[in-house]
Length: 220
Picture 1: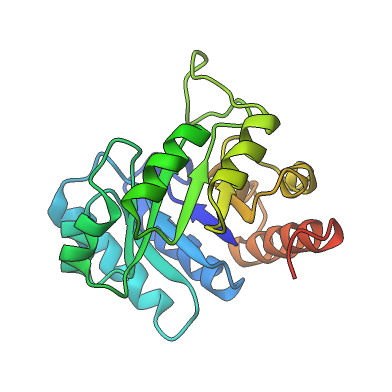
Picture 2 (picture 1 turned 90 degrees about the vertical axis):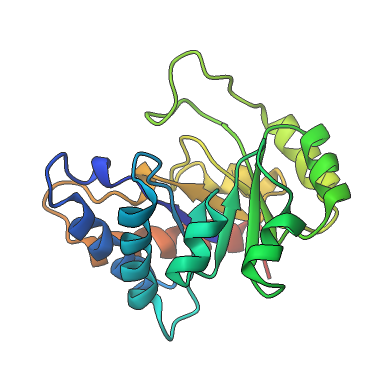
């Protein structure tokens, strides 16, 4: 499972950031990426809902699910497929009251203890565990998890897919898979280098990630 987490400011510091993000989402859909997690926390509800609606339209008819970071109300208003909850947010069942039983609901976790708590509450489709490596989206003082902690979280999840996040690269994907993760989530991993078309970059990255997980036998 591959999850693209958005940050339009990584694509452009100018007013075209939203349009470039929608283009990135279109590339993710074309590459078969399973989840687009819209994480634009500085946007108010109205512009966030407008952005999510555009991405939902891009994903229509595909297998890609569009989730909103922690705002179940915005997800419902924009017709998103679900919500990704912060570790300190409402429970998954509470989110489903707003979104319906068929919504996709994920949660961020940072330890096996948090996985246990999320399991007891129920209603989750996947978990995102991290941070595994230093990353631009977190400050220098942000704690970094070990692969032993990732393995413990995957075991505690009891079948719920766990995605690793935080400084993930294609080269690190096999190590993540061997630790028991079902996939990866990331921001910078999906931002195309200068001069590389969005579609080509995302297709290349998605193919390489799937190859890494298939090669180590972590997915069927």
